[in-house]
Every structure is written in structure tokens, then in C-alpha cells.
Length: 451
Image (cartoon, rainbow, N blue to C red; front, top):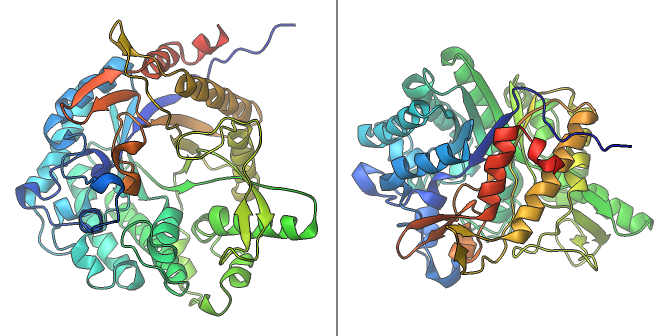
């Protein structure tokens, strides 16, 4: 009996993704304002090896070269983010024309090479001027975000067919407001729920602005990490339920269902606010698609010493782990997509990030750097996507993370996710074997995976 073909549906959209602070460099060039990541990266002790995004991949100056790399892959689309403070240095009010022009030129360059732009409005780099006014803790930020979004829609929606409001709001609040490992570096159980709620209010306000000014598609991007109990003991099952609600439902529920899961009150206790009912009329807006970022799973056990979840992940024996400590578990991607459809309905979905950080050996043969673990990761996860589609998931496309090795936030340049290797001293780009495989996947619409 022959195995099923890995060919994907006709019209399946193949892309790659990046984000502004991770690749652009020149964060203060041409009148841009500082972001919270510019501030955080220059705070001693916050970044691995003292790395910053001052140069990163120098994409701000080398974007044409990078579009050529995209063309070589045969990408249908490119997902990038906009540095809010590059366009509005104070976060509101005055528009910086040179900052806006950079994104306009990038979009034109993509279109010239047949690559569809996919723009994310917020990928973590909040203008520092707005952080000084309370940032995501200030309810006014929903209006500030809508103002910024309107500027971008009016400037680029004639050429950008797909927009996202936010990328991974869970990471913003968990890392930035609860545990302090990411910008703006706060540690407060009282702040995290407020920041989370205002992120979703802002997303809703941005979608409303798009309905007034846009003509294509807009959605929102969540990172989903399926949770599996370490044992069938009641305390491990309950810990898994809390971890799932905290990471996977805290943002998708208000956006798509207009409510929060009850477990959040259990998790945060007296730190969980009573939000006005009218707020959910703002958070729940019609989306044209949802982006899902998937990297790994977590096997969870009860741990009373871990606040606020009283839960902790358990490392699995005899499994492959990436250099970020994430288990390679492709079945979790299939499970994630089928769960999402069951809970939220038949919304068009894109995998907007999926990738792996592994050590890249410094040997280049025939112009290609061999990276067998990353290549294996890509093969396995594309197979998991194919299973989800066969199960009826309305999956429209896939964006590999990431086009380039880049600044992995507070981990600096120590972790490499790229399809292209970047020598950060010389800015030389070198394709990896995974890039070669991905180009073949795109050209064959997946059929190469049958071989």
C-alpha cells in the first residue's frame, strides 16, 4: 500500500518571516524614536553577551539583497513587522516620513519580485515614549495603537494584502510584565493581566480601524504550545489545564469568543481584575485569519513552587531538543491545529512561525552550510501540517522562521533559526541545506517530501 502524497492543496501559500528589531539594525536612523527593546538591550546585564539590535542583520540598508534571497527560495510571501517608533517616534502624533518611506520601499521591492507582503503592526518593539506613559498598562494604548494602525493602512494597504495586529501577546506579558526577562523588564503579578487585556483591546481597535480604511485581510497571531499531563494524577491534570488556559486561551478567547477562560482567575487570584463587560465588544472583532506560531510542546506536572501556574514542564527522555531547550515534537503541531478548529471554528489559519535553533557547523560545501537537524525539523513539521489538512483544518499557508539568523531577543546572537546563515561580523549570508530543501518544497508544493 503506497503512502499518501505530501503534495499540498493548490494555492497553498509558502513564506518566511522576520521581525523588525531582530533584523533591521539602525534603530534610531533617519529620525526614528527609541523602542523599549532599544532601551532594554542597552541596559547592562539584560542581554546575552551584551548583544544589541544596533546592527543586527543590517536589513535596513540591505533589504534589497535580502529580497533577492527570498526570490531565490521562491517565496510566495514575506512576513515582516513594522517598528512603530520608526514611523511615529513619539508613538502618536507626528509621522516620520523617512521611517514610513523605508517600509514603502520594502513593500515595492517585494512586489517587484512577485512576493506578497504580510505586515505585522506590533512585534514587541513598543515606542519608548509610550512606555513612559504607562505602555500596555495604560488603557489609552488601544487608541494609540489604532492611530498608528490607521497611518500604516492609509500608507500601505493599497499594496499590502495581509496584515496582523499583534504577534504573540502572551510572550509580551509573560516575559515583559510577569517575569522580567524581556522588555520592558517588569515583574508583577498585578501588571501582567492588565497588559494582556490592553493588548487585546488594542488588537480589536486596530481591526476596527482596518474595517474603516482597509480593503484586504487582517488577523492576529498567537503562539500556541500544546500541554500534555506528565501523569494521570489529578494534580498534574489540573496543572496542565491551568498551563493550557494561561498560554493558549488567555488571548485567543477574548479575541474569538469575547471572554476569558475561568482558570485565569484561579491562576492570578486577587491580581485578576474585573474587566468591564463592554471591553469584550472591543476585543472580539471579526478576523479574516489567525496566525499560529508553533515551536514545541510542554509535558506538565504540578509544582507548588512555580508561581503563578503551580506547574512546570518536564523534560522528556530520549527526545531531540533544540538549543533553546524546546523538544522536537511535530505531533503537537497537528494537535494544535485540530484543537484550534474544534474550539474556535473553521477560521482560515496560517502557520506564521515555525522553526528551530541548532548549532551550525562552520563548514560550507558547494556554497551551502549543512544543518541536518534543522532540515529534519522542517520535514517533520511539514508532514504534521499535511496531516492537519487531511483532518479538515482550514490551513492556507506556512511561514518558516526565520529567513535569516538574527537577534534572538535577550538571548542575543547565540541562537540561530535562519534558513540563511549570517556572519554578523561581515554580514555575509550563506544558504543552509534547510533553505535548499525549502526551495524544493515550494517549487514542488510539497511533493519533494515524497522522495
